[in-house]
Amino acid sequence: AQSVTQLDSQVPVFEEAPVELRCNYSSSVSVYLFWYVQYPNQGLQLLLKYLSGSTLVESINGFEAEFNKSQTSFHLRKPSVHISDTAEYFCAVSLPNDYKLSFGAGTTVTVRA
Amino acid sequence: EAQVTQNPRYLITVTGKKLTVTCSQNMNHEYMSWYRQDPGLGLRQIYYSMNVEVTDKGDVPEGYKVSRKEKRNFPLILESPSPNQTSLYFCASSLPAGQGNEQFFGPGTRLTVL
Image 1 (cartoon, rainbow over the protein chains, first blue to last red):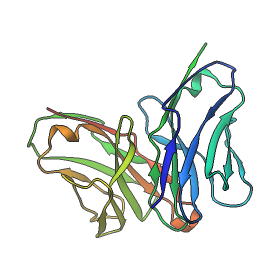
Image 2 (image 1 turned 180 degrees about the vertical axis):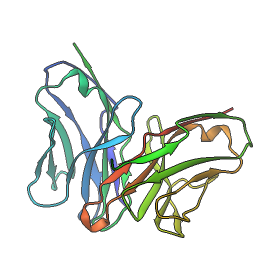
Image 3 (image 1 turned 90 degrees about the horizontal axis):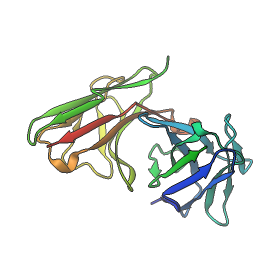
């Protein structure tokens, strides 16, 4: 079975500073990896995903994540955050051709002016 | 607009009073699922459905039932709610597994059982 560990439960950060959210997974086979974002009082939205190919994936709003197979990690980064990035972020894993998603516990990012 | 809808968004009830949370999607997805979100635990899958009349247990199915009589609808039923089912519930539907597994989530239902 696959599992996900998000290493930080809360990350406070100042506006325009960089942020990194750490995610490690465990699996004996190849996996798909996802980052979802949950803004206050909303459902989850897909931020970005790694299926195969280039290990660096990017989102339209400036986030990027790098798949590192040797370290079984999929850390999320943004070089300069905005107040509007305040949200909870979830890392998730699934097997290719399997619908089941396993989620990490989530990381709450609070951006302060 | 492609979306997953849930009703109600907020619900306060008492122990033992049967309730149903509805979920509907307009994307013609075959796969649908229910999750509960609790602080520090992330999202845990309750039940899922691969297609009409095909449902199966997820990781935390105790105390819940589901049905899938139509492709677009996947209601969650709590026949005798208890306080430990106080949680935030999400319904989701998914692209086919061979197309990247992206799941689309509803806005959530916050349930309080007194």
